Image (cartoon, rainbow, N blue to C red; front, side, top):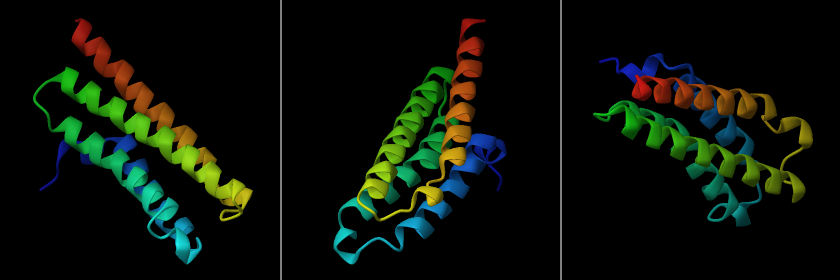
Length: 120
């Protein structure tokens, strides 16, 4: 059964980002499995999860709230990927900057759109 969040570009791009993050983090040192690797993966998974949960809520304000959480998780993910790069676990050219930027814009656009719906 198809849910309404499946049609959202932000959800689709965030699913792709999760796959990218799992591939990128698979090469991190084994001593990071329960530290940075785990944290990065949890943040990545949090983004589409919160988009999905918010879209299934009963009110637009609840959806906006969960989109804000997704955007926060995305910022946290970006920070952790930069830390991984600074520690030498991730080459600069493998940082998914374009996807992060696109997803941040998509989520921000969704928030704006939903806020306009509330104001009507």
